Length: 321
Image 1 (cartoon, rainbow, N blue to C red):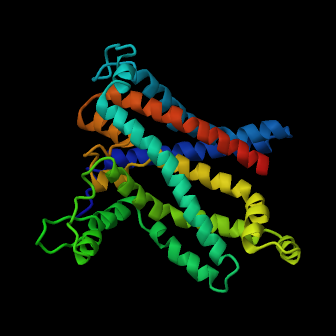
Image 2: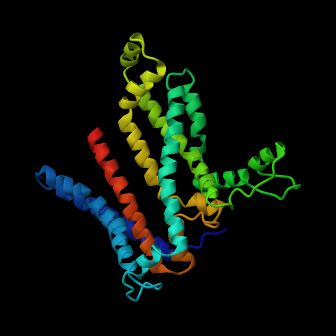
Image 3: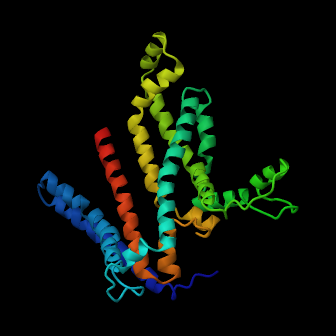
């Protein structure tokens, strides 16, 4: 496929304008810093100005625009008041998406952290710990879409008597059971989607927790063992309290990530069979059904749900620092 320079001129022009604007901003910063003595705060403000500008253009202004759209009708033109928010808390599909999102936000962090903690405790002091961690990190090398495709094949269903291509149904049939449509039956299908997310995130938790466990001073554990404490007591009373800040960071990071869950749901079920989450429902309302106001209202709700977790994570990092 040939590259048409004439057809791409507007895009190339925008690119050149962006490069020129960036060069101009950098030149102004260098000129302001080298023109004369600059106070430390003023220099910091000058250096942060481009990032603050990009943050305002790319995050603050779109956020305010989304908030304004949440009070408009489906076309985003006429004022609708709180109608979109009333719909959001009365519509069955929206309530199901909210319920599923909260289930994801609770189960994914707890389960991923639990598996990661057990795995980290098992391999932290092992000679083959690095190799063992690399095995658990393998699912993180693929995208959520790829993980969704993998687990969709795991749950694949064919009628009884037909050759099963899904790993789970093959195991069921091997033990004289009846194949099931795992992604159809609600609410269990939500749990099966969560398994795919846990599969991709357990490695992240294991790596951070392994590093935290290795950072625990060995003198503490050795002294406890000499005093007659069992391995379980050492883990509960010394290791866990020592890695508590890392545990909190892992839980918060995973919880924030689950609110953005979209790819796995989109790939495996498309939000059908009561498996939708807020991010997916927001996409459907805004882009599939043309309900701009409803989509914006769901985005505002998603932002409000994520905000406490982000604030708590920032406080935890500041406290750790």
